[in-house]
Length: 100
Image (cartoon, rainbow, N blue to C red):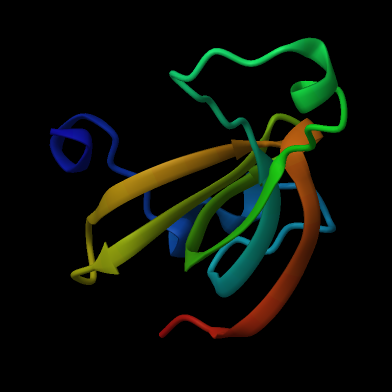
């Protein structure tokens, strides 16, 4: 559904992005995610809880002040399997390569 509703061509949209933009590149994004538990826990058990540190890789189709949007599939005109990481959750971005 996202592939149908949210069509972005990074090759055409590159000029509208910021100068630091990584649109059109293949990225590895290290980010902080929330965690949850269905178990009962007292304060002592949870007071040292920290976010999960995760990594996602994909084609960068959006890179702006709101964050980075990655897609895992690129058929040359459309993308699918989109995921957006808000800027406040991103710890590190590594460029893995250039998209075609």
